[in-house]
Structures are given as C-alpha cells and as structure tokens.
Figure (tube, rainbow over the protein chains, first blue to last red):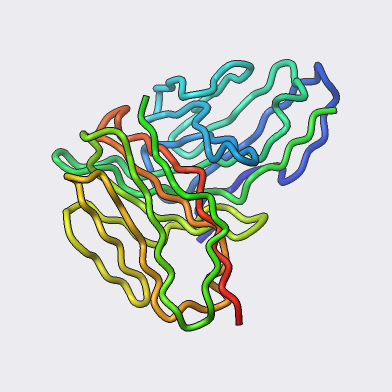
Length: 117
Length: 113
C-alpha cells in the first residue's frame, strides 16, 4: 500500500526558477490537499481539491498554482520561486465525508523539502 | 478565521507517566477533531479522532472532547520514550469546503527514560 506518494523528496531552486511538486494517492480518495509547514507556523493550507475537477484556494495560495490531473493526482506548481517559499510541503488526501458526518482524517505524503536560494 | 490553539511546549514527562495535551478551538461549528503525531523530519500520522462529546479510548490513548468549552485533549497513559514527538490538534467544520482541517501549531512532547 503506497498511500500518498510525493516527488521529489528534496529540491533546491534558485530564485525565479519554476518547478512542479507531484502527488499521487492510491486510496480512491476524493479530496486532496497541499500544505506547507514552517517552523513556528504550523501546517497551512495552500490549495485543495474537494473532488476531481475542482480546486480552491486555501489560507496561503499566493505564488502557487495547482492542477487536479485526475482522481489520483494533484500537483503544485511554483511559477517563480522566492526564498519565502522555502518550506516543507505536504500533500494529503481524504475520503469524501458522508452526508451528516464530519470530515474524515487525512493521510499525508512523506513531504518535499524545498529550499529556494 | 478559525483558530486552533495549543501550548507549544516542550512538555516533559517521565517514562510511565500520563502525558496530557490540550487544544482549544475558536469555531463553535467544528464537528470533527483529530490528533496527529509527527516525529522530527517525518509527516503527520493520524492517531485519534473524535466526533462526540466525552471520551474515546484507543489503547494507551484517550481523546476527550468538550464542545461547550471548545476544548479537546489527548491523554497518553504509560508514556514511552517512543512517544516523544510533536502532537498536532486539528479541527474542522461540517462537510464541503468547511471540511478542511485547521491545524494547531503543535505541542512537543518529550518522554524521559
């Protein structure tokens, strides 16, 4: 069981470069998320996709774009990297909650450590 | 703006003791409550969830929820050095986009042998 797979695990970018972080899940989950985690700031939601074909902004979307390629894959793109985007990025997925129930817990990928110099 | 507050710690307890981790949240509409454990350099791992007022036990872990006080706690009985990690509290609302989890900044727990 792979769960949620993120690539790459580590990346160093120069300011202004672009890159795409890849995420894929094999649990048939409808919802997928991108978070960043910074010391003292906790996990902050960048973008999410409640279901295939939809994406929405989270708390800190500036400087990022996303694509929900299909039900399995959700990518995060940095068009012009900045030092402020140095962080650990986590992808997560969850099942769609049934009517009348709260959200199910997330399963996280192993993370991507990104450094922008 | 939904907020989830946790004492950042570090919380230090001796091996075999009970560790008590606390969390308060601002949105009275929150329906689902989660505790994640995160080891240094690793991703968060779900250890407990609770939806209803009261206690929920799973092995050495007990989650407690008091919606009137907007308070969630996690008790770890017979703490072990392997429990040393950062514990993240997460809460959410009801379905749709409100289903997104809001995380606290975490409490670092250190269990001393």
